[in-house]
Length: 370
View 1 (cartoon, one colour):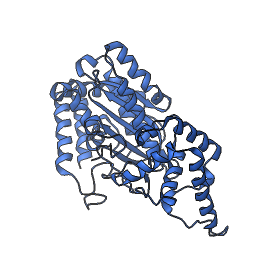
View 2 (cartoon, one colour; view 1 turned 135 degrees about the vertical axis):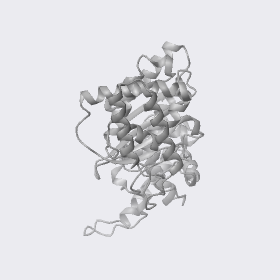
View 3 (cartoon, helix red, strand yellow; view 1 turned 120 degrees about the vertical axis):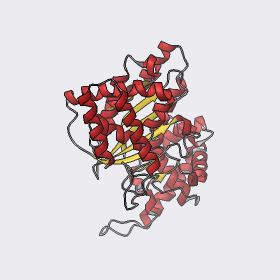
View 4 (cartoon, rainbow, N blue to C red; view 1 turned 45 degrees about the vertical axis):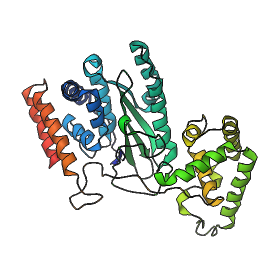
């Protein structure tokens, strides 16, 4: 089960101040009502559901197809939650760009305030970003990371988004703690995306042997791994089709050339992993300095030298809104979809905003449903 990947076209600009203030006001009322109805864990489970999140964005005033729905809705929820945490049992950290890097400090600030040990939440935040940037390499560079959590650290959710500068699309990833049994084996709760592509998918169940092989390569003497790397480089050069086409005859799954990897930098990282000798792929992935190129280089060695393949399946399971009437990219999940609508209808009907705002919000929700 996966929680969320969403492909969205990128749009310029930002939400005007008058709209954002209304989004925050409406978000506050929805959070207060939902906390009394479902508790903080109920809110988090719905934030991690792409159907519900997209519907919420429409209720708050954003178009269903706008990439800005991710950053602005998360921003509105963060602003709305300030000062009512004791009522909702919910905190929000992180955000877009540089703000995303403040997530650990914001979690630690709540830890200091509550006296609860939230160090695992800091780890969860960092690991979710590591996984979606390094272990799942689908061409989207993360630029937004929002972390939602309860003050006791029992429940948490992540909504993060990456950008592909080539196709000008954004992809959203959702996580929910109740569905994460293993950070490096299918940790998401749902994935929605209008387009599928080939990916270096080391979090697929089918990549288990590859994860073990990569971890073993990272823990052995760097000189041995570098020799294997040189063999891969020689193989690629010998099988080049020539300057006319620029193509290379080797498994297309890699999507990179060995020339993209700085050998000295790669060797330096291998020395670090050799000294630490990670016990599993999660420990390896969490090693300081290990980035996407290191992971891909070891994945290439794993396959081309040792014959251990990894998955190239894009983990997308849902379209970014609610499926298609023709069953493409997947049939509409009517039960889940209708449930999202009904929950928000109830929230809007009961929340403490004026009648005109309620009518407008309900109309946006109706338009989304249509």
